[in-house]
Structures are given as structure tokens and as C-alpha cells.
Image 1 (tube, rainbow, N blue to C red):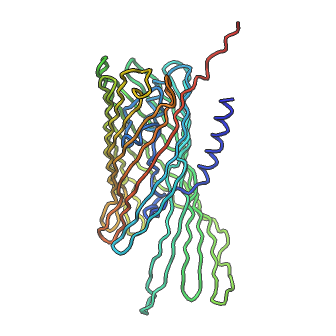
Image 2 (cartoon, rainbow, N blue to C red):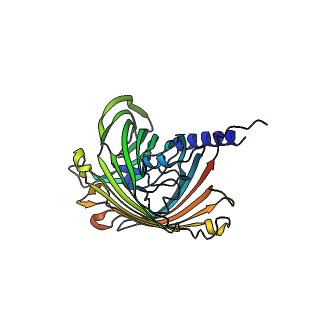
Image 3 (cartoon, one colour):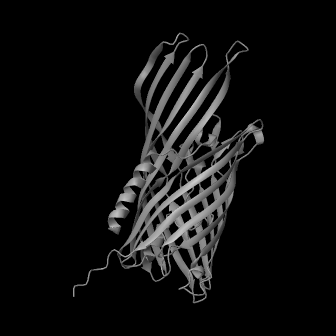
Length: 414
């Protein structure tokens, strides 16, 4: 019965995830939208760290090498939700927005001893914007308005595996399939109304490899280092365009109807990451991560915007008293995180960076269990008011359920 319930819930989550609109920010106008920054387990409460973190009872989507430590006869499954309340501010006005959506669904299980596999589905990018642009009519002092709206984004379906190669060394491989569409409508208001609808489909695959090496392993102190290489890839795209014109008398005229075009490939960059995780007295865990994405190497430009190399610095600290493993309070996990992201987009010679601070709790669902209800709150900022740009202040609440099952035990016959 439990297995059937999980399957039903998973199907509902997948259907909802694939059909949702995830964000509302003007910076999602560029490229493929803004990156989905929600992680699995308690990693969101730890500043989105985890390159070197390995817990046999949690799924780590950052580094597939962590799957080399999954326990035999275990089965991990996880669902996530998040909600965001944001204030968008310019030099002249301010607007508040809110949205909520499913963040991910993932499972992990052992293939055999010291070898595990994980499968998951999550948003990769998110697009949502509604912008009015004032344009001058050449040769006159009059202007007209172009309203640009967009929604959609790309989803990521991944297959990853990790194995223990030596006593304290694990390696992992992650193959991801990216797919989805970004819909954009341009509405031009002059003496008539013109609407241009573009549906841009993108798809492709990307490969990531990682390792984790436990360099210190004593009863009171453990230290693990981790590394990632994310290989560059090209996403192919096609566009379906339709447009029509409505005259001042109300007559509607089709200009183009469902014309298909090939889009230039969108280049995702080579990136690398390193991390270090330390566990002190089995109570305090610290994560320190660094990642860099080499967007400059993709040689992509978009109008007056350019792509710049992106660096991400993150710190996470987790505390669990562990005085008595049979007491509920002793198994609560307290989390804190910091994250700074230089961003990859440069507008008006200003790189759009972001930062946030996070707090989280890992609450056991019951005594003597490794099932956790993870909750985290993040507050941060993205963008700037300089050079007539837009700054977003956001509050984000993330919830996820992390279950540990035992589905591979053979039934005993008396």
C-alpha cells in the first residue's frame, strides 16, 4: 500500500511540475531564464552547499559521488515545495509579487554494496516577466508602448550513479536531459494592435562527473573534500511563431500563422566546483563550497547584454545535539547558510549578482527514524538600483519530505 501511495503522489508531482509557471522577475527575460536554486534534503538551509557532503539517508543532487555511500536495502525518496515573496524595486516604483511551486522529486537506491543510483525531475530554469517598453516613433516626438510577457522554462530529468572505488574515495556520473519551452508575446500598441507569439523549444543533454575523498576519518573528526566537473553542451532550439494585427475598427488580420524556425543553439558553459565538509564530534557539520561557470567561453551576446564568468561562494553549518539518539529533541538538525553569486549576466556594464542568508530545521517525522521534514527560510537580494536597473528583495520558504524506506528485504517464510 505504501509503495502504491508513493507512485500515485509521484505522478501527481510530475504532472504539476511540468505544467507550472515558476517565477516573476524581469531578469528571466535573458537567456533561458533564471536558474532554479532549490536543493534536495537540508541543503537549501545550508546555503545550497554540499559538494563534499555525503549522508546515506539523504539525496545529494550536487555531487553524484555521494551515491557511493548509500546503504544496502534502503530506498530514499523526496518531494519538495517552495514559495517566494518578492519586492521588485526601481528608482521610480516598487511592486510586490508572490509565487509557489513544486521544486523537485527524486529517488535513490543501491544497485549493490557501495554502488547507488538516483533518478529525479526538477525545474532547471524559470521564466516569468511582464515588461512595458516605451519606444520613440522615428521622425516624431511621439512614442508607442511594447509590452513583452514571457513564461515557461526548462525542466531537468537526471540519471546519476556513484560508487566507492577505494576505501575512502567515491566517484559519480550524472547524465541530465534538459527540455522545455519558453513562451514570449510582444504586444505593440500604436494606432493598431499587433501581437507576436513565439514558442521557443529547447532540448539537449549534459554530463557531470564528481568525486569525494574522506581525507580524515577519526571518531571525533571527519573531513571530506569533493570536486565536480560539468562539461559544456549545446541546446538545440526550434521556434513556432504566430502573429496577428487588430485594427482600430476591431478587424483581426493574421500576419503569420504557426511558422517554424530553427533557433541558434544555446551554449551552456564548462564549470567546476570544489567543496570541503567537516564533521566535529558527530554534532557539528560545516560545508564550504566554490563553483565557477565559464560563460565567457561560450561567446554569446544578446542585444546590449553580455555573459560573464560566474562565481558562487557558499557556507553551511549544521548542528545536532545527538545526546540521546532515542530522544526526539536530540535528533533535530539546526541549519545556517550563506551564499554569494556573482551572476552571469552583465547589463549596462553591471554584473547582476545575488546573495542570501538561510536558516533551516530538520525535524524527524517520528522517533527512531531517519525520515525528516526539512524546512528552510532564505532572505536575499538580486540585482541593483544602479544604472536604472532593478533590485529584487526576496523571502523564500522551502519545504521537503525526505523518506528512508526498506524495500529490498526478502520476506521470510516460516
